[in-house]
Image (cartoon, rainbow, N blue to C red; front, side, top):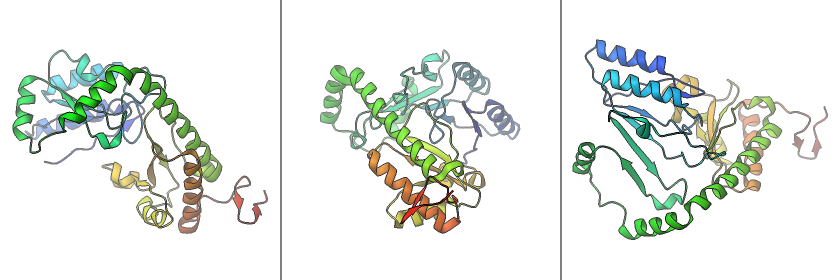
Length: 277
């Protein structure tokens, strides 16, 4: 099975590009298996698809009789708490497979998720299932926790994540200046960053790891490798604020050593003193 990459804008999937791709497949007598999308806090860009575009996406999928695979695993992690309606909830004609997870909102090691779909689709999935599933005890503990605490837990979690994001953005501004470009995401656990064209983030990944900093190179998160060459994804969920600041400073030093960017600016300290303006 070959995946067809669809470009994104600040609302996620570009429907003009999706429509063109579906028309092209139809002209070649190829029926796509499904349209995969993360409409709420897209990974890695952090975009949220608006309700109007969601309606248009559903209509387009219905015209082409192609299912939508809706990955909603980050939907709880929105700063203002205004979660858009899921595509599955908006859909009136079937054909949307909705999946979610508690590994982002409760605990990464929990590995408990769920699928919402029609009975026929669920039956077909169960026939392909090859493991025994998550243990009943974990599911029971999760159910007890969510019933009593989930509505209070999520706002606390998003406040903490938002504070870490602000620390990360401030550290990038201090250490990289205008050499690091990004849009502030409305939620999630990651930041999608554009560095100067001279930076190859796959090479940067190895050099940064040797210095104790882990990054996600852009080409691993995009079907367009050339577009993503100088981009990277930074996850801020786990490290503390101080670890974020130290990590960004180290990353900037590695970038300067390996690629000559960012250039030294007045508000960045050098060893032994401040760089004169």
